[in-house]
Length: 301
Length: 286
Image 1 (cartoon, rainbow over the protein chains, first blue to last red):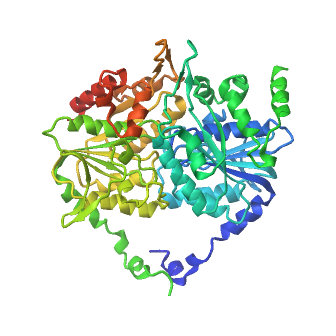
Image 2 (cartoon, each protein chain N blue to C red):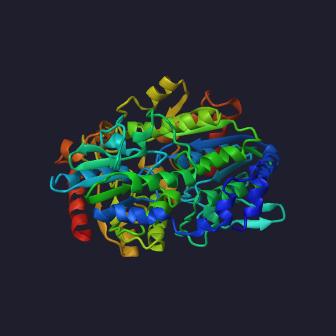
Image 3 (tube, each protein chain N blue to C red):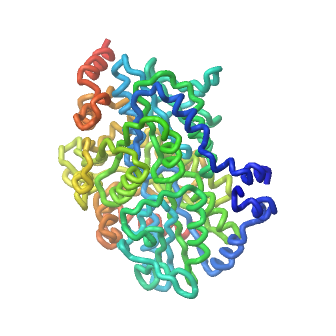
């Protein structure tokens, strides 16, 4: 094995120098939020994208969204950046900009074809995440939001490890109401506790569907064990809010548009806005109502 | 000093094929049919489908069926099969799987946890080791069908399951998706994965394909097929569309309660869609 000398010397036991480099690089990022869930398909990427849009609606704030889902990178599509490519400069990789103050990075931008599969084992995925944190020229940021894949494995351990010499505000945990989801989400909460990652709160997604025809509400994913509300009460965690199912959310995501702009008066959009304005969020993370008003006004012009 | 494995690495022994592959090949030689249930996307209904495929196949009491859950981080199968809290026993012939019925056996890491909320926070290599054990050390017996439920993605678990089954015959993969493009995008990657590792694709199932309001019977496309849904993707890629399953709250309810909705609401549109898929699956692959 070509690495035998390296292994024998014990050098691999030393801390990864990248951790300190990343600490230095991200020292100008004021707030870092991870979006996690033990369960797949609950709306992590949707939430991450719209949290980024909401925070960036204040044009004085610099916001970045990092997608560390290496196998299933949804963020480029949801942000309307499909097909964009990353450029390299003297100061590192340039992220892709949605607006002047909203930058995005994803492995999706590094693929030659949108259908290319990234079939990598853990170590290679870890290496890419390290590069995303160390080599991307983020600039000075107010917010770095990190979207993650489901699970408690390589990507999650690596992102926590590589951010260990920086301050991370905490994690927002996404779930849907049914027990099969909550079961996985409790594991994610255990993960956060084990790695000492603070939990900002929990969002319950797909929380009921109002029929557009007769306005009857159906619980498509019934909260058989009390939903996120009971789980949060049991585990003493803040429930940041509940977002109903709305076909226009999935539609907007497919079209790469923010549904906060497309249907700002929908119950789902109102629920999202209430979440990002929640008093349970650390003070500096709140978007003030004025920013949404000015945003929707600017869209009207 | 240094790494305790240095002699092993230096000897080049790690370059030889994993002896477990041949052992697994021998162990599973009495399994007639192996089906993997895959999706690039999370939360589309892989575990739900795997569980109900197992139930449907096992409804023929002359068939021996087993369901293997290789989702190490988020093992949903014990809950969905009504086996939460069960434990695995070890015997002389290996680990005993947990039986739902006489002819339906299940294995999942969920059965190895001391508490249901315990998180399995493992990197790839440790997950791979567990999957190897599931295939090599579980006393499955002679099976007609082994169904393997997988986590979303194209990573360690997927590479490992294909690698460890490489000296056996695998019928192929059933790919699960939902109608929207954000799902299909990930599913196309999974299809590429299957092509790369030469895993035949039995067909595609489109889940959450419309919701009929129980009050007024109006159909809503909650996950709109903005790019043509699974139907167009299958047409483009020349793959069989095995069927479309509508959203039905009773599916999620049954899964939470650990009951087969094929028994709970056999006349529901969703149950009928499933039965038709399983029958076409049977005809296609067997």
